[in-house]
Image (cartoon, rainbow, N blue to C red):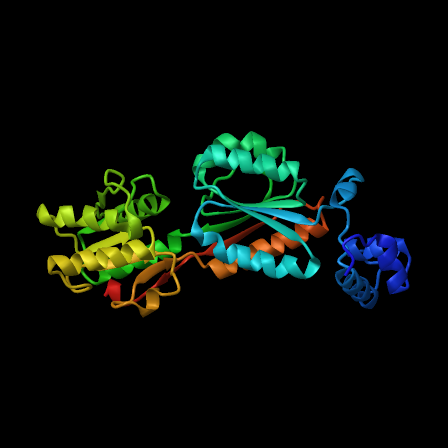
Length: 327
């Protein structure tokens, strides 16, 4: 192992030219798979790494991708991207935006400074002030649940309306009429639930959580519903924005003496791994993240291989996962 190994050392030990070594790291089609594996294995043995700064100065690829997330739902996206990038020796820079525009602006600038080959990011309506900055970046791939996006770039759109229509129809068919949404009023889930209920002539009651101090494990959702129950309001079904909050609402109902689902149906969102194993199992709106991850991976692969190709868009439908908490 030689920390000072050079490209000439790799070429000599591999029995190829320095140009072949360079092409092997670029995954150039002129280098056969057998030769590429031999060169990369020797580079690994000699602890050789290409000079990234020199490559960038020559206008070459940095073999890096920036990933910007604004919620934990992006984990499946990251996994799918990594499955594609790791075999090709790409570096990924992953950042959490916390939904803060200042953080997003700073992270996008950092990705640009690093000359990443592509940027994958979640898009939300409140990101519109950043459009001018994003349009200056190259190879941006979006995944989003917002249908209207004023950006000419690759995008995977998840349509949640079919899943919410299925869930609302299921509740109404089972005689539920006093249906609420527990969470912040500006949430996309709240808007979607309200719109679909209105299509059925049912008015949704909103139970706001932003006025409660934030606590671990969504206890503010618990408190918001408990206050309504103690004040005499009795919903027979509630939606909320994630399965963890839904589990808290189930606990709140039990502590108040209500049975889930006979007295209160509860539906979360996200279809987390443990939701099917809780008692009761949590009904959920699934964003079909595995499929989204595959589509984003395909968009990224195409963009890296054909950077000048026209922008493409995919549409994925969310699904209503019927489980015990919905009755």
